[in-house]
Length: 82
Image 1 (cartoon, rainbow, N blue to C red):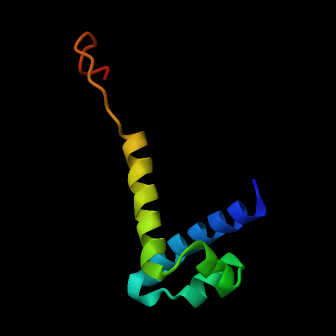
Image 2 (cartoon, rainbow, N blue to C red; image 1 turned 180 degrees about the vertical axis):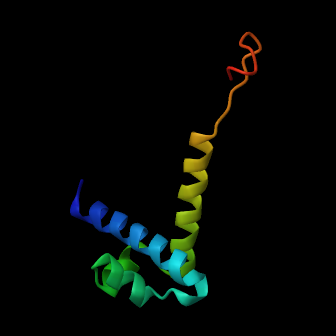
């Protein structure tokens, strides 16, 4: 994984922690950068603002949730097994 992608992932992880602990209003870009171990300049290179960062996290969570809970119904298999 390229260094830029590693930093991107660190930022996302740090942002999840900050939003979970402090909420959207309480979390700051300074705090997220500090938690990720990157400069604010690097943070803003990856995400133009806190709202866009939060949207990305929400999008990733939705995508992950959909993959985990994607259910397919097969009428040939008893419902209890499905």
